Picture 1 (cartoon, rainbow, N blue to C red):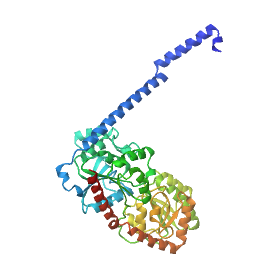
Picture 2: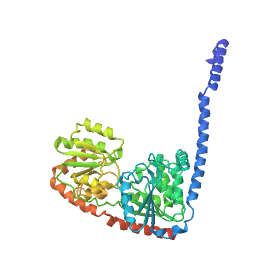
Picture 3: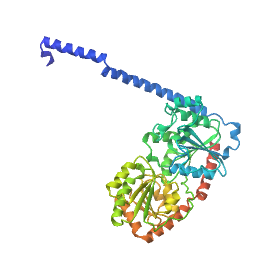
Picture 4: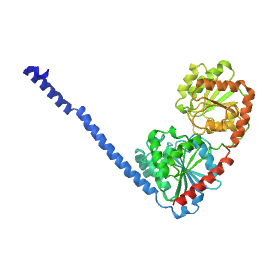
Length: 464
């Protein structure tokens, strides 16, 4: 026991303890760390307060009444918020398709959060559609000195408008916030947002001249829980909301609770031109970003089973992304280097589709798989995981394609082998797939948007 220690030893112990504590106080040890921790907490509180003030100021600035010049023809003006109009991806492709259709009868402008390349991935923008980037990240772009300085300072500050759980939040900044509210101040017409972070901004705007419309290009449970919590709180402030599938519509019914016009409008498929797919070609095609979502790590081992039975068949995967090296390693590990190719994104997807007979989709999840729909429009035989959401909305199993159990390599391999070994099934599914795709052409989907916009505006007038 400590009290039983003789006094000299006890004094020595206490002296050493005091010396150690004094040394700890003089250097940034646990006491210093405690002070720094309290300091960081104070800084975070100040930053949260400043963020809230900045957000209120920006939203108030954007909520100005519409300019007289904007009020005229407001029912024929559409503004679309898109993350990157110059990039690649299904949301971008379908948004450009919609803008092209609407431009025939509306004044259409796309506001792109960022731009990082000179030319759009999907080619020239639709005629008559104005496209503006809030943050042009290209090197060497000339800017006035004052603008360059302001941009540099504001880009160093995180966005106060976008939700921190938004997937692309790091690409937003106070610069994009300021640019966005300046673009929207005093505007009138329809404002269509295309992803959760942008939907939430639109919901908070309270701009009297804008009919706010949100879009869901995935499905509810794809999003992080904090994002879903904000959706439940803010989405009812939108005027209307569009989803791609019936299942997703049911998910959002509980969120908007009848307070928002809710409609299912699937993606449209563009006319790719050219000829139909060669259903006798011994090539399986897959395409998409080389990321986990697309599930190419399932497709490669599934094709290893195909190669064992049919060594004359080839797999071609078109895309780019951060998993390229890992996927190439999988190809080599399975001994497939001679039969599986990782190709760059196709400059002309229509031509790429024409050279294959089977389209394989191995995604972990989708929204509404536009590329698969384009493959079906070319008359390709499709083999797809029955993942959430979209494939089951398009494929009637063994009538216009084959659905395989999701994330099941053996099931995917079995579907591919069945389609390869049964030429009659392949040709029958290809013809039926082309017939299915015709129901999703813009001449069928476009009028749904015309009705939706008209109903959203009418509902806004009644509510106002």
